[in-house]
Length: 548
Image 1: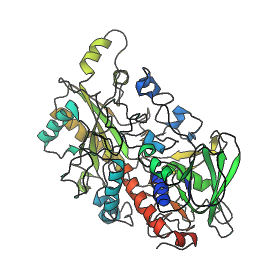
Image 2: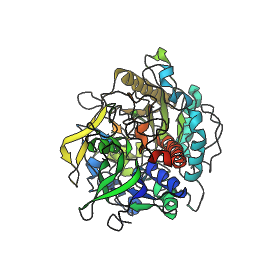
Image 3: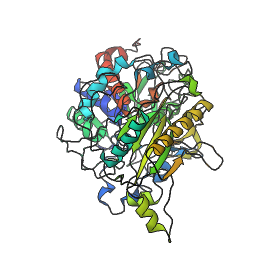
Image 4: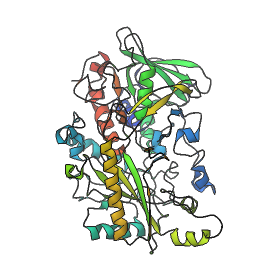
């Protein structure tokens, strides 16, 4: 329902944000019998550009990946010189705008402090999450093949992976020639009908809210169940702050009804914040009070710090043989984890993976696809197009960036959203370790190109004219991290704020390190674990008792 169609009677839990963390938490708590209200500053998505002849143009306008380019009223602006942070404000959050690439973190990703000491260990292990990874997969519907030698044994996949096509066949040949690991990438996109959802039709534009329901957006996987269980979802409800009492405990959330502009307050016994790695610290910092003068849950000064994205690069290559690189799901079809683990002899810590991805349609390929290799205008255009279109493949080089305290989210002094609230100010730079890591990964991708006999290769390592790294920040995490010590973390291993025991943060901002793979599968597993524990210990949370 909309923000105007409700009473503001106190509830058990108010959840802020309807993406992965908010949807899973709302569903689980409601199915356990708790009264839940979820506040979402966007609306349901009922517009899909897939059938529009101008869909490729719309990727750069109202369906741009980045809010500063899209400029919808439900977005908030980012105060940054050059960063492009992918996010979507609407029911389902950024699962409206993602590729549903679904790998898991590796066991070593949870013990970086033990491994090399340049990042802390998580307070939990892979084994703590394994059952919740499996449970999330069942609810989302994940396609893949068992037996990946680079990963622990796991529960079954729900379907086979979507068709990988000629592009993957060529890449696999190159990996085999080099003797490197490769495996079909797990994806939360259905290759066959599952739980009432239709199989993927390979329309090829996964990044604009899949119109068939084959891609696991929270609006099709979890929100129907959450609503059936009694969750009250208020759309166009932009949270201005989390309120606290004289003892510093959360009492609910003040929000703006975007339809009327009216401010409202929703009282709750427990508050769950699920706003992503930028939105969550933004709300916490806006929620300062006498009890929390530096922002809510921020006595450690860690709120907003340790922002991570993954350090990324694209290496695109073109082959004499057709690759059909415009056909099928956009996200990674294969992954090579040959270099995923730390080997300090390389001159850096952490690892990198190589993801084989497509180059989208004819218009976008002509405009440079992922590397800026543009077709010439006028003379030579048709020759270039015949030579390049459907002959390319993209390798996305994924690096595990280190958490750095100076990489952070604060409140902007300059920019405001459509409700007058401050935007988020982003500061992010690569450290020397991460620059060496991504350069190593780029060279490995170029080795693949040489093994395939590519007639042309083009690198996009996201540098500006001055040589500075300009992150395409698709993944947002680390800014309210979990830990064992309240002096160096924001929440404990159960996602409970150290400073405010009836406040929980359940989203990617709690992640301690980022691994060298997409984070959504892990965010989902964390959310199942946290929400189940909160439901079991709800009375303790209401009484302000610590879970540790």
